Image (cartoon, rainbow, N blue to C red):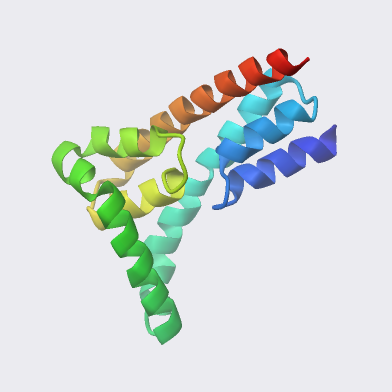
Length: 152
């Protein structure tokens, strides 16, 4: 049980799945549904301060390397295209909705980068990302529970 919770938390931290993968993994591996939600939500929300610290303090130094700079510019362009119009128009609500959508390419990683690129204040960006993560987790959690109970 502890191993499944740890793996679900790792999926929730991963940029390849976030809680969109962590919650279903935990539920389908018989972890308590409430623990699944809480662990995956908490793990997913921890990404914001780590990413923001990275963008605020380490990104500047790493931009000196060509490979990193090329990759960072590619990611920034992709995020600006995906979230740009919504964030530029709606600010806080644009980030919240962008992070909330439970589809690939949206989530706290992209939301943190978008809020950084659009120079959103830290607290406002954290709140938008946290609420978006919560709503995304709730959607995924509900769909997973409905599917899980339908297959039992």
